[in-house]
Image (cartoon, rainbow over all chains, first blue to last red; front, side):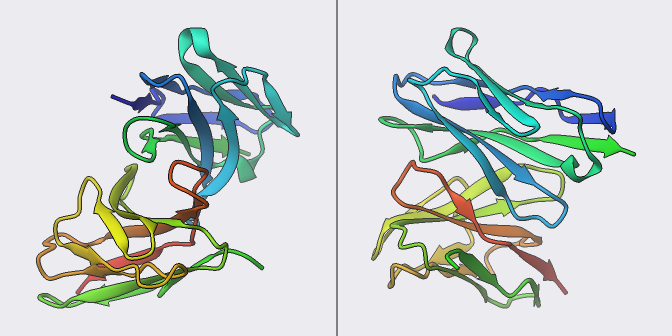
Length: 115
Length: 112
């Protein structure tokens, strides 16, 4: 069965610190997608990135970077030089191409960036 | 601008009352979804629809009903059978099943 684990329930950092949010997944499919979403205090989930299981290249977008490692079934998200506006709940999600439900979301990690 | 709209932003329900939450998308997406989020918790799937006139139950469908008569619209009715409806409800859509989901702003439902 597909499963997504985000072991860090809450993280607090001081502004300008780097922070990594962990995501570990389980799947029996060989083709799948991994996602990260941000949920700011307003509530709407904002899509950040999608990664295909065949593409293990790391991705960088501004202060955000993602490290996908199939060998450890992990898809970690790093924010460099964190800012107060990064405070939100971050969800990792998995979508299998051939099995299971549409999407499985992890439980989320609440990030608080303190000024 | 393409996107997903949900209305109302806040909704109050009296005991024994059915209420309907609206979700509309103009992204030409085939698939639409409803999730429930309780305070401090993750997302739980209520219903999803992969195509017009078809929908499937998610993990917590009891006490809810949906319809998908138009591609753009996927309203959710919270029935009186749902004994604990207070939550944040999020609607999402994707081009096809299992593709990237895009979310609306959500509706907060409160019981009077």
